[in-house]
Length: 134
Image (cartoon, rainbow, N blue to C red):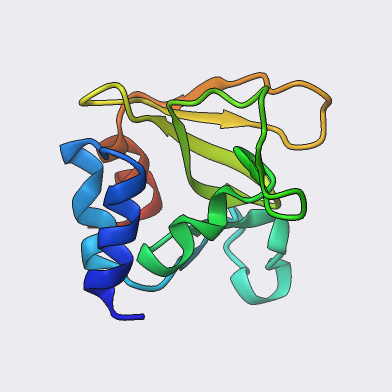
């Protein structure tokens, strides 16, 4: 599937905020960012410290297990309908609220029984800046 077709499918599902929509247009593939605090990156690298940011190819599939159950082909009812997962770290989700033009980025731990979202960043710009993404 070409980028335009992927973006058409994404845009048919959601109206994404202006401050986010450019990201999947400019990043077809997912990005993997090591956020390890240690200076010895190679020796101390851990998947626990890697954030996967969904590009156009991964954005729809990235909702599986959060807002959508692909096994049952069903929407997961306890997920906030305006939340779109834009990244994960070890299955812990980073989301934006697509009902807001300048949404904060929210974080929630996966597998806790209930989703308890906390504000991770005040904005996408702050989130991307922290990760070194232009």
